[in-house]
Image (cartoon, rainbow, N blue to C red; front, side, top):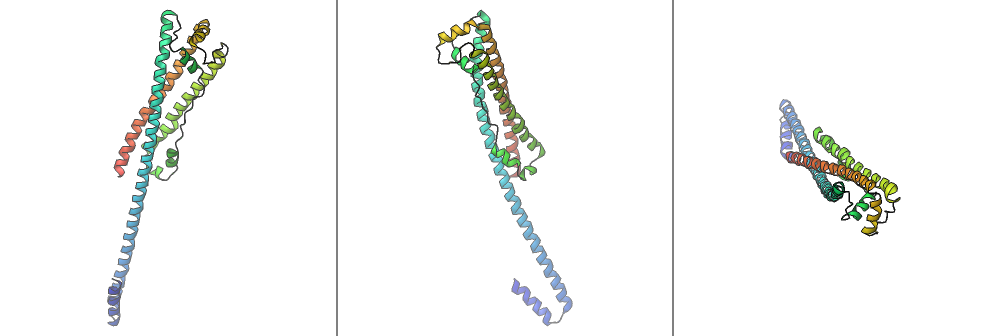
Length: 242
């Protein structure tokens, strides 16, 4: 192609036809400019596609992270529901006939003393995505929903776990230790004998535990529900950019 244009230029110069040569030169310049513009356009298109692929991969990683959070929250929710059911039975029996049920007494004592609850709300995937330029390309409604979940919903779950731990410490110091109930290796008869002497106070602490666990479970379920909606919107957005 270059040789072809070179021959044309040489021919026009030999013919000493300056006007035709000028028109040809201008045409050649236009062709070069068009070629450069096309090359830039192709390069921009390739870069755009590359960014879209990276964005898709980040969103897929975020969806995976959310699914893991959902599994964790639903697992914790199932545990809290089981605990609530068993503890509520003890309260119901007490209110019916003023008797301390021994069926789950040791379990309740352990739960009353529970002060080591921990919840990790951090997400390296979310932190990484929110600090990239791609974050700015997401729709505002979607970034707001993602922020709301990671910064608010998960923080509420974490705070509920922390409150449960604070309650466990309070119960340990103000009820279990003074009544020599801190040792969970005691048999049911020993625990029952000590609890029976402080039955009304014991039931009060159990009711507070129910309130604490119920609040935690509500936050876990709300978080799981938010995850479902967020994943649905992320998958819908990913389909649009595919």
